[in-house]
Every structure is written in C-alpha cells, then in structure tokens.
Image (cartoon, helix red, strand yellow):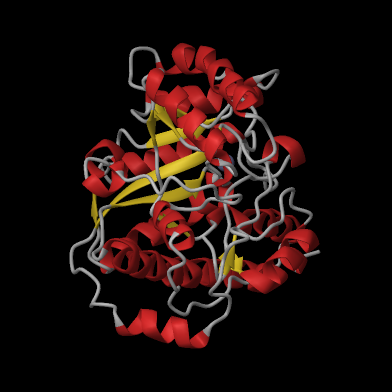
Length: 351
Ligand SMILES: [Zn+2]
C-alpha cells in the first residue's frame, strides 16, 4: 500500500521464518521493519504525497458508502509447505492436516496454496505436508522457487525462479491447474520495464496473477505464538488471539474501503493468508468473523472473473501491495484512517 502505509517483508527462505506481505503506517514502518530484522524495509512508494494527511483521510472517509451486506471472498495461503516457526510438538504435516481438514469441513476444497519448492529439498516433513494438502482436494500455485524479491532482482532472474518452481508443481499437482502465480511480498516490479517484462512472461507461460484484495499480515503473529507456546504463557497467547482477530477486522474493513476509493465500489475479494501454525489455529474463528460480516466464499477463479482483476495500474511500485493498494498508491489516492498493527508487542512478546 502506500502513501500513508508502507510494506516491508521478510522471506522465510532467507530468514527461516514466515514470509509475507505487510503494511503499516509509513513513518513508523521502516523502524518496525528494521526492529524486526525484516529483509526489505521501505516505503511503498517514494512518490507518495499523502503521508499522514488527516484532511485527506477525512475526505476519503466522506466519500465512503456503507459496506456491502454480502461480499464475496476466496481464501488463499502462501509460503507452502513451510511458513513461519514451528511451536513445540508441531510439524508441517500436522499443520497441513489440520488446515486442510478445516477447509474441507467448510466446503472450501480447491483452495489455493502457493509454494516455494526450495522448501521441499531434503525435507520429508514438507514433502508430506504438500501431499496432505493435495490429497485433501486443495490446489497449488507458484510463489517462485525461493520467495524471490522482484524489487531486488532482475526480471530475467525472477522468470528463471518461476520456471524452476514448475517441476515440483507438476509433480505434486499433477493434472490440476497450477498456473496461478502469487508475487512474493506482493511486489510486482519497482520499474515499469520489470513489471511489464514479468507480466508478459506470466501471460506467455499461461499463468494468471493471483491478485490480493485483503491482507492483514496474518503471518506476523506466528513466531510470537511459537515462542509463547514454548514458554506456556497463556495470557500472552490469549492476547495474540484477540489482537489477530481485531487486526483482521480492521484491515478487512480498510481493504473494502480502499476498493470504494480506488474502483468506486467493492469487488469480490481474495484474502492473503499463510500456512502458519497460528493462522491454522485461528482459521475457525476467522471464518466465523467473515461469516458474521456476511461474506460468501468462492474460488479464486470465480472471484478473478470480476473485471477489476483485469485492471493493471501499470506503475512502478517498489513495494507493491494488494491490487487496491497499487491503485491507491499509483494514483495518489488518500487512505481512510486505520489502526496500526501491534508489531512492537508481537516482536517482544514471550522473549
Ligand atoms: Zn510469501
């Protein structure tokens, strides 16, 4: 996102911790990213012009309509088969079994999980986790071989990583459609040349981009959860659950409001989640939250039939973001107010 927000991200492939996109208030963001040791601190768009502008935020709010009573959403999970730290007694296979069982129980077979095949190397637990996911009726898409940053690499190197991921996709997904691509960190190119080159490569190789419309950085709770499970601090775990759901609520609302500002109306949603132990634990409550807000579930292919998903901001964005974020930032649209995520507490909890 942008202007008032920025994204920093870390890669589990580089840090052995969960990767994913994140967004927070801009001026505190770089600081947080640095505090967290994440790999790519940075403001989303250097050209942002609405930083912390209360008047602009107020104008944005004044144009909002009531939220749709029956919004649509597709769930997606990134960083398979291994996202984030493992709490004591957990394994990738156990997480995949629990997560896919919960999805099946909610009639969400066909849910997409985006893989970094590097994590399958010399890891029987990760390999088994992916088989469990597939055998439960879920689908696979690509997230590059090693969770590569397009901002930090050339288009050619990035394309080579897409190609390198295909052997595992073919092996595990078989004849099922795995030609969906999720950009690591939601970074689609910091130059127009890169952005256009990779989009052309994806198109020429039969991929569709698995865009995201909602993101609350679910992965950021996981490592604190793993630590608190190790130290058995129940009050801290209770706070993690509460703050996870509060943040989900806040950023689902923000994402929907952004759509009104960016597109003039809400669009069917794709939410970014990660296959972490904590998101797996919280999924039943997250599904309850979505149902309470009137959400109806759909597949990503159904959702992305909406014409909004064919739109391309065609802008160089160093730190990308959701599709609405990209439009907000590239068009310099003002964000409505939102609460920052509790990254400082997540970092220090149960240390
Ligand atoms: Zn990722």
